[in-house]
Image (spheres, rainbow, N blue to C red):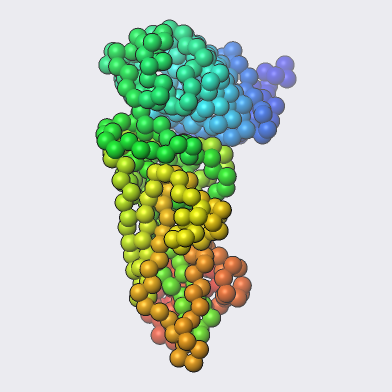
Amino acid sequence: MKKTLLLALFSLTSFSAIHAEVTYTLENGVLTITGTGDMTMPDYNLPTPWDNQRDDIKEVIIENGVKNIGAYAFGECKNLTSATIPNTVTTIGNHAFYNCPLSKKLIIPSSVKSIGDYAFWTDKESDLEQVVIFVNKELEIGEYVFDGRMNLSDIMLSGEHIPASMGEIGQINDKKTLHVPSSLLNEYSTTYPWSDFNAIEPMLYLTDEESYTEREQTGLWGCYTRDFENTEWQALYLPFSLDYEDWKDDFEIAYINGIRQFDTDDDGWIDETWMDIIQIKNGQTRTNYPYVIRAKKTGQASLIGSGSVAAAEISIACSTTTDRYTFTGTFKNIDGSIMDANGYYAVINGELTQDDENAGLKPYRWYMQIEETKKQYDWNWGEIEDDRASIKINLIGDEEGEVTGIEELRIKNSKLPVEDSSIYDLNGRKVNEKNLKPGLYIKNGKKVVIK
């Protein structure tokens, strides 16, 4: 009786427990499943706790900590078009997403070891076109997992292993293409049921363990995997483009907007340098172009893209009145001794830094060089000592007016006092308080309006 009452209560609320410490919320069409540790979802004999709200569910987000997706968990959610599966889920149960329309692209992480029978089966219209599976070497794929997905045209199997097993494919688009790492192309082509695909094409699979040396590989899918040990900004340089819709949930990516220099102690000499960046919030990145990336959580993660081209180590540059800054991308390792001998800067712990000769640069990143075009002199003491050992990365505020530029100044690490009552514009430039025009400014880290 108690169980029946609990299920009735679950169906009437938007925040409920579904199993042990696993809970769910439903708000504005988004069903969020939350768990701590290795909490699990049960296999459901319908109805599910959200059964009465099934038609309201448009998106499912399963957060880190949930270990599995229970059988029949989201079946028959007729308006469910998007599902986010984290890298803590190890099993996806039978019929977990059956008869859900799902749209465009589905991504299954490398943590998954088992996908149950009919997990994504449908007999209804579906817009699902692409499936990306990061293959765990223990991965077992059940029977008819994608049966009925007649718009499914591309399946990418990314990673260093072929799945341990797979059942019957079932009915999907006859023009489907399987994309696999070039090193595993022959194995997939001769192993059932993969060999039944009418087209198997190589994909570009990159990790920090191996440099990219190919020169002409156009039109391929690409996948790059990196271990993100922190959530600070890092350098990124790839031979294929990325789509904002694919990275937005896991990363922030920004482009370099310029370099600014500051006299923080008002002695008349430049003693602090910032690199301004602007976050990308739509569209695609460019191929062979230097960016910075920040992961929203630590751990191994992958970036998916397309349109790979020749591996060109392209440079971009910008200048101040005293220096020229050049950013050069690389697809290979650069030894620490070379970095040190050339005075190259690398992004380390969220700042541009010259490290010692023992620290090299990994592939798929960029380095920076500074060419001094005008020296600073104190006419009493001669040449001013160079104070650019570390260059801060400054994120300029977004469209909503959030003052991220000021929040990223890292004042506690600079020569400015912690309690800085100076006035700045929204780009972080210090302004003359005696000659202010009406507008929006920053003081003590907060927005103020000058009328």
